[in-house]
Length: 352
Image (cartoon, rainbow, N blue to C red; front, side):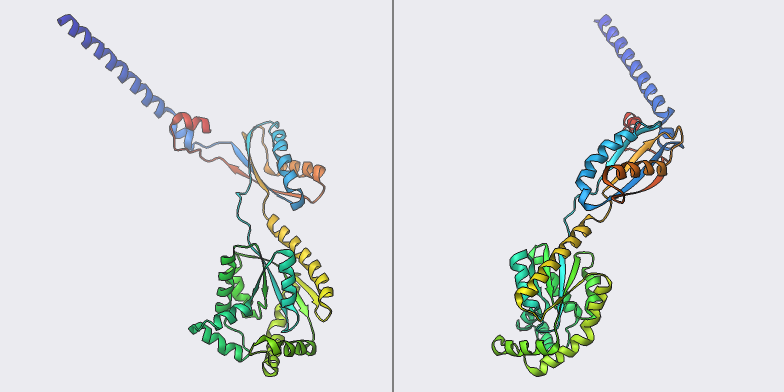
């Protein structure tokens, strides 16, 4: 019995000794290099290449890039690379402003665009009139502005438009009769500028005498209190003084599509349809804006390398594959100052 106890004690002391030795060894290993692995100066470089491409080659370019980066890694000193692409994001809804004097034919052409192109038609005037007839305090204020032929404050109009767009859940919107003045434009840019994409402006040009006849004829059946000669004259004056500069602004931005609204509906529609096609091309271009990919190439910098030389190689190869001007490449080099990871020592070494 005593011999058994002595044997067990000896084994326990041996195990304890081994455990203490292993613990000492583990501490020694941890203390030998950990700070150096994480923070010591390094000659390693990360060459970062940012690539932008034309929309028509985007898909082919992505396939080609993965293959070409493997060729880059054959260069001396290259250790590896990551090809990064923008995370998928929901595309912004597209907006087309529809401008022109009262009675220029905006509503008729908007109906055709809705029917044949699938857009959602939002009339700033219709939204204001719906709120006006709701009986709310805001509706009464809107009523006074409309009777006087004045433009409703931008905060009210923009809120009604954005609420309608969000509620719709659609992707293409025609906004009829907005922005009508510089205050409208400023309010739109401040409130909705980042949320929505403006693809263009449909401007239906029509002389006042033609518009006046149309409005008086419409007034016989429309039931609108502003389809009378006194209100019509005020509306013309407001349009000329306040909306015409907005059209000029978008002309300067090369977003205005001017259409003669005096002709038959079918003839006007032909020009409208062509303009919508050009606007859709603008939306496609806006969607393709931004980097198509970012490539991070890891180098020992032995022999010395530079991001600009890598960028030149990628540019030349892309031009040979897709044509000049289809791909642009910018670059920068970053030093590896520290490699940090929230795991144990082995994981840190693997990360390095």
